[in-house]
Length: 301
Length: 302
Image 1 (cartoon, one colour):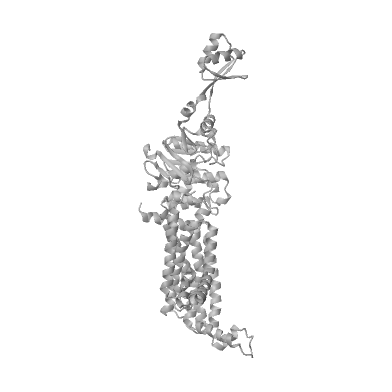
Image 2 (tube, rainbow over the protein chains, first blue to last red):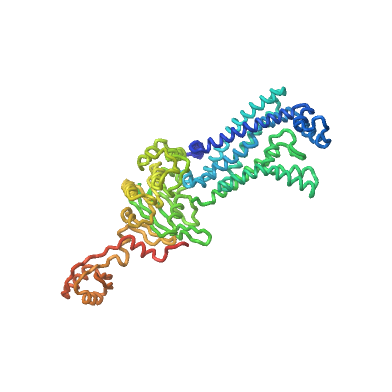
């Protein structure tokens, strides 16, 4: 039997295992539902941002300043927001990758669950008896996670694209499809899905306790970007004032994936897209390497 | 099937920090018979079995099946079947799907899942989720999983746990039948009377070391008190004096228990002295007594 036969069996078995518990519809349900919600929220935001400035101010202030003057600082902040968002390209990118926010977290969690379930459900013994080479098991799970990430990206992107096109076209801004910056961000979003799935497998192999792994990954994902932003803002203000210091927040994985897919600058000092990709790839490789090493050395049972 | 399915444990040692779980253990398990693996709790039985199966890495030494380590076997499920813990399937998956997933991973046809379900008598509960299984059903599913690849070697860790008397009898017949077909069967248990009924050979360990290995009869006979003689007489004082003089050790009571002399020697001595005997019998030690004597003072948590 060749190593590739062995790998194929593991992948097929993993897909079968996933299909025969409630995990698959829980994940796909969550994926579709959050994408729908985010697509609608994104669409409403996009329409607001694409209005002429006067109307934009009306909507943002909920008409509270009707007849009166808007305080000048507030007005200039609104103008800043409007300028950065009042571009059909920016809105197209946001809308077409609306699936990303929760989608990436979900594929990461899926990767974690693929590994940690073996320990949470005590099936690791049975799995490693059938496939004693632990590297093959991890590789099989990795391929499974990547395949599922591609499917997840495809389905959720279809939802984001459909609703995005409806909103943009309906508001008279065309679809913006065919513009390379927009198309590229949709494709880079696929790369982000794949990398987060790999990241999840490595994370799960490293932290085998399912609860600890899923909760810490969720916190890292949801709070990581904000925390990194705040931290490097503080460093920039009090320690070393330089634009590249702000750029360093790309080391937070959540920031890195946003940087990777965004054709326009996300924040002051935001590095080019490839840096985001490099950071994510580095994390994925590191976690897989460490996770595999831990699994190879440890005793099962 | 002979040497191809022989399990050889060679100088196997496993240390966890300062604790030596298995200490230079060597023994072999032959095909065609049931070998009982006995020892007090914490003696290192489970660790040894897991080392044989490549799940636990030995600190030193080697374990082989047919001359190869588990990791070197190309299609392990078709050579070795193992039941290590009863609760090792996903709680939300049905027994049938658990077996089918194993078939896919092992490269076996899906129909094997149905065949082994019939073999262990679990077909009626096949489409129920594992969380609803009783301990006995879980053991049967474990055995079904082990039998998927129709292996020549079976390794079972406490398979009788949770089985009712009927289940235990079923298991005994199954394992004896499998050994009869020429397969190697290694089974650990702490139910010694059950082992005496089931096993042909025993390997007894304590504190991670080998205490005794051999056929059940040999091991039982090898013990000091293997031949104790029970005597009943209306003249116990006279007979006791006589037997002690002949080199016996006598426990007095309503029945005298004599060690160190054979049935024949006791009978001859009584006849010569004209002492009537009402009962004369050799007490055969059983596995449980032998086990307790061999492992005495070696049990306990380390």
